[in-house]
Image (cartoon, rainbow, N blue to C red; front, side, top):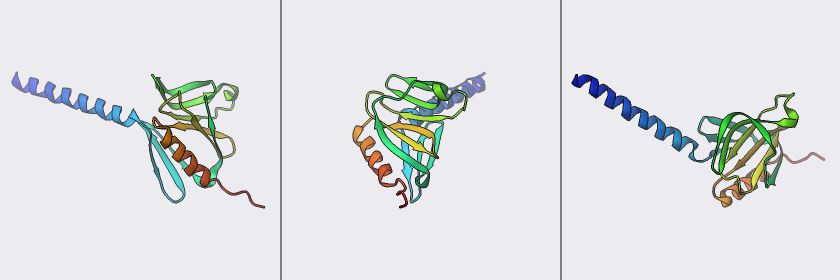
Length: 142
């Protein structure tokens, strides 16, 4: 009988640890950069963007209405993979990594027509990543 209680205790502790890890992973957008790409991670959602594939980087106040394919929205944040209503036939996926819907978002267009929306809780972090990406946009050839 005591062995069964011990097993349930371990299962309860393991469940709490898994839930805490999932919360920490989704709590904010994690980014890492290297010489030719930026990696964005938020929970189960991960996107790798090569600087050479960037087409445009701009600020937007609101993201367009989209259909959520998977992901979540909770309070001021939204993360996941969406599809724009106007492109519902082409099945182009839009990655959304928004930590604060009320702040400006960075709209990134890459590989000619694919989109990604990104911001952070701290607007200075958003400004810094915007400037970082804008500086790495491929220069048009003359």
